[in-house]
Image (cartoon, rainbow, N blue to C red; front, side):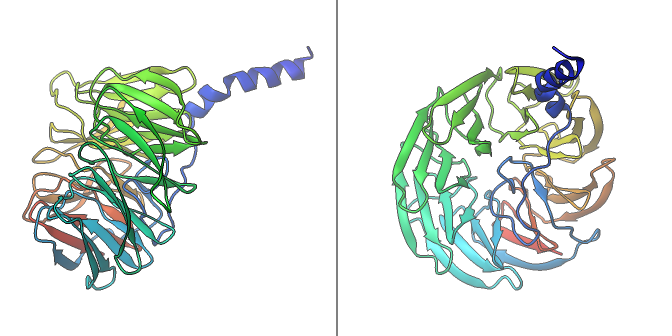
Length: 376
């Protein structure tokens, strides 16, 4: 073999590890949209929009019951689920109600709407998955699972992916609701599926990270994550990142099928429920120890920390170089993504466990008292 061919072969062999060290740029929604829970197929939590550094409250909406669901934003409309079982469509500019869809007897918990091809998808705590017309709020179809749905859906290539507490990951036809396949795990499926290169990835309550082929539901490989996981994984650049209920944050290498770094605070051991964001080589998430942390994505070394006043279950969104995240201390925080320095905060008067949606220069977030706030 010539020296040139040998070098090419070596580079090809190293490609997976090099990709892991240099995370690929994620696929994002347009700056005027936030169509799903984490904003992209890779669950990166990045927005192409850049709200003002100092925000002002533009409008609020009283949903009546607690809002744990994260808003979706598409075509000038905000879609959000509330604890009283309503999916509500609000005018993004004014907050005026466009329509309401009622799930009848079931409440909506943490499942957040996803919008694709004129349809809004969401699950409820009665185990029913709903497809609703984005134009007028009319129900198109429903699908019944065996237990509550807290997973937020991901819609890709005509397929809707979501998990249920009945232990299954489901794939449905996006237009008809017909089941294409389901995969049984050994625990509840709480996380939102990530999608990369024809595979969907979920971190499960059975402590297993799974890669499943979307076309037929075949399980391609698994990685032992060590503990119960409620967070949705970021999957980008050949790696996956998420926290668990064993008080750890993990970095997984998908080529070697191994955990390459683990963070556990020696002094503050609390679970991680917040789903991470990935921005410029940093993994950013909140913890139930009241801390918001940024880690070096390659090594797991802590880059910065910020102390909130209560647990942080809200998942961060990064936009315009700033981190937007809520806390059970009632506050929406804006932090500098490079340093963790606080740029701005707002006391909503109620705990925030929902996550922000950022689009069109605005931030949308719901609170435990049922209020939806829009800042810009």
